Length: 303
Image (tube, rainbow, N blue to C red; front, top):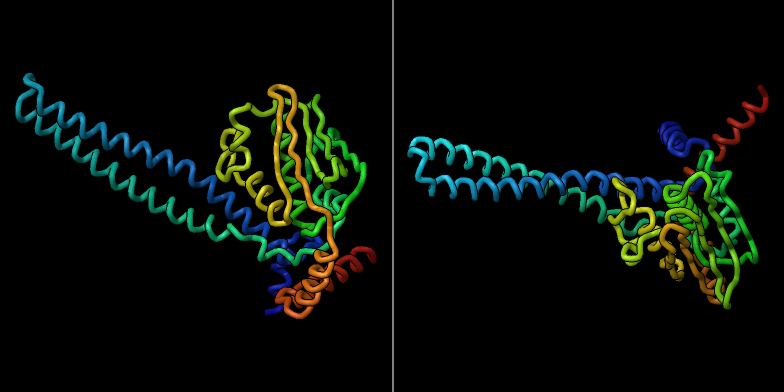
């Protein structure tokens, strides 16, 4: 049984040395994304059914007032309108039921941090490199510029910050062209620890800026609207601040500020480390997975 669990876990991780809690969090984010994407056509269908139901009721009332049609013709058309109205109402209820179910799935992913490994003192430069190493941006990677002016520490989670990096770069790629560039900058500015993702390109329309971090809102047609919302939530869980500014048709920049690491934060990180070592339900699986990966690497190197 343990071998099956380890094999299944290895398949999920696909060779990455990522803790299982982080993988669970990634799966929950994917679940939320799929739920949001499934909601959009259901909401459109529900609204269309509502409109059809209203139109059928109006047509039925209008037919009864027509002096030209015979009573038999009126009755046939009214029956048809009643059937359309009933079926539209039934379909609308079905769509609403599915929407409610998807909302429950999304509610279950509102606190994915509890599945992530404990918070610790991490280097922002390390988090940027970690995030970029886990994603494949294709030809767009050539347009990436990484500028580490002054590295700083964050009391947070490296895997979650890596996900924020990936979300930001993917968003920049979508809204920039092959001749534009994307700049990742880590620096201390005006006494603040700042990590930012800047890109030239189409930018963001002014009226959209207040909604960029809103869950379910997407500037891209067909987008799920979960990536940037999750990024803002993650940054705030690490006592950070997320903001965005843009010049339409020129550039856009997402900035994330973090407080300085204090002695109290370091003490808390040490305490969390002790608790994680004592009460980590994933520890045995993590160790088994690492042994399997080490054995696989040894096998490959021997070939």
